Image 1: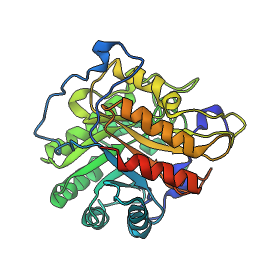
Image 2: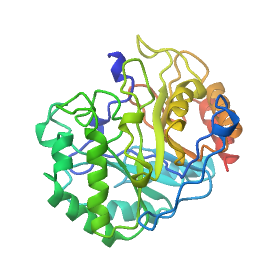
Image 3: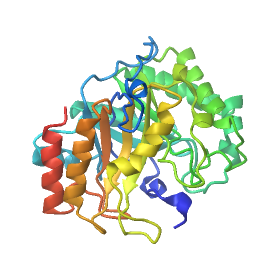
Length: 339
C-alpha cells in the first residue's frame, strides 16, 4: 500500500444498490490545543435558511455492517454501550444508485438516528480514471438531470439529512481527487458549488452539506484550495485512523497526532463546525484501550469538537469497538461521559 493510500478502501463496501457504512455526524466547532487563543475560539458561522438545523449536543456515529438495510448490529452495539449512537451513514455511488434511497434514510431515522449519506460521483467498479465523472463535467452540468431528480426526492423525504459528498478529495484514490481523472486545480470547488446550487434551485432545505477530506499526509493536496466556501458548506471534518503496526508504513499514533495537523490547517481558512468524519484504531502496535482513553481525554480537553464517527468494521484491521474487552470498556466509559 502506498503512502497515498493510508485509509480504508471504501470501494469494497459498495454494492449494486447502495454501499453502506455507518457513522456519526454532528455539528462541530474547531478548537485546537496547539492553536493561538484567538484561533481556538470558533467564530459564529452565519445561519442560512437553506440548510437543516444543526445538532447542539456532542454526538457519536458509527459505521456498522449491515446498515442501512439491516440495523441489528447498530442496535446491538447501542444496547451494549448503554446509549445508541445518534447518527448513521450510508454510501451511494452516482453510477449505481439512480434515486435517493428514501426508505433507507427513513429506516435510520426510525431507529432514532440522523442519516448521513456519503455521496460518491463515480462507478465503484471502474477505478480512478472515469472521464464521465470528471469534475469539470459535473460543474458544467453534465449530470444535472440526475442531480435535479435527487434534489426533488430529498426534498420530498423532508427529514434532516447530512450529505457528505466526494470525501477524501485530497488523496489520489477517487476519481474526484485533484490531479486524478483529468481534474485540475479549482475543479473540485466548482463541482461542489454547482451541486449545491442545483439543490438550492429545487428548494431543498433539509440537507446539511459536509466537507470531509482525509487527514493530510506527505504529498496530499493542500486543503485550502479544495474548500468550496462557507456559503456552501455546513460542516467540515477529517477522516483518519491509528493504523498501528498493521502496515509497513504505519506506526502507533494518538488521536491528537492523527487529527491535530489537519485541524490546524482547516482552522486557518474556516470556522465551520468540525467533526471527525471517520476514525478507528487497530489493536496491533499498542494498547487500544489506552488509546481510546486518551482519545476521550483529548476530546474532553477540546469541547468544540462536536462529534466523531467510529468505523466499526473488521476490515483492513479490526477497527471494531469490541475488538477486545479492554477496547470495549474504554469506549463504553468514554462515550457515557461524551456530552
